[in-house]
Image (cartoon, rainbow, N blue to C red; front, side, top):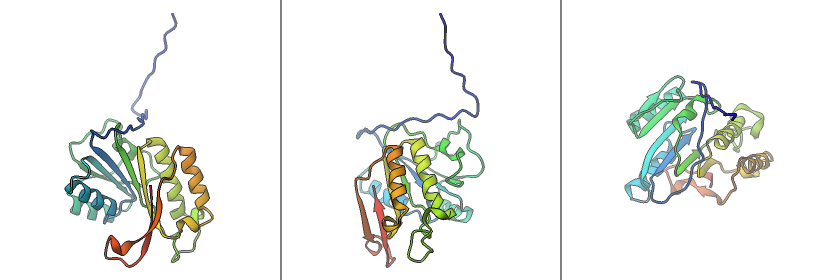
Length: 208
């Protein structure tokens, strides 16, 4: 006759594992989005060309000025401060000024179907122009912090973009292993000439 009860408080965190259903729209979460947010521009192009139907897009970056530029361009709702677990909005585009290392913004991402995360971590520690410190500096650690959130949020798909030399860095093996532990496998990776996508003469690493 023993009964078990589960009690939830205001601080309780709950996450769902996203499933894939081709008949449902897609929800995007953009990490390290920046003011330009190339991933969001790409998703809007796909939606305009009727490739995908998008239910919502959440954009995260800790740089307040970058997020204000994002707001001017996207006309979305920009949020400051901690996000409660019961947060609700009717806006399709929502941005939050927060570091990826923080937990509260995960309350903005609760898509149970077709959740996709895009991740453009700081490239300075992986690029030729930086000191090639990889995970041994704050910018590099941001990459691993995003994987921690991916493991928690469990999206159906993750899209990465970073410096073209990231896969040649000794620490990249750690990144790959961390993603495997989180339950993800790489299905595609390529260094792409960026001038084929935008007016920038450089190459970028893209991966799924």
